[in-house]
Image (cartoon, rainbow, N blue to C red; front, side, top):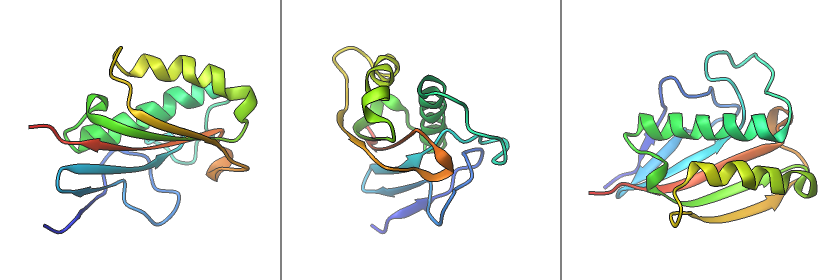
Length: 131
């Protein structure tokens, strides 16, 4: 089966040449999301790690919803933070609220020097269709 390259209506506009997600054999590879506004890409991203984390998670849920999937199907997450020491703890406090107890995906979190649009955080993920 050939991979399916998805562009999701209503998801944030890409900031580079990529698909929102690629699907292969039930696996969903979701491109990293920033805290951009899906309704108006020209809007500034929100200030602070708390607001940006919530917006990034909203954007990821939007892409997953467009694939008829949800956070409960996520098996792997990668997180990129530009201010790792400052933002790691507050990010974790918010992140854990998006997943059920005992149902935390595998995860890698790294500090990076910069992200597109001046973002403080970017998250990509892998999900698996069930059933």
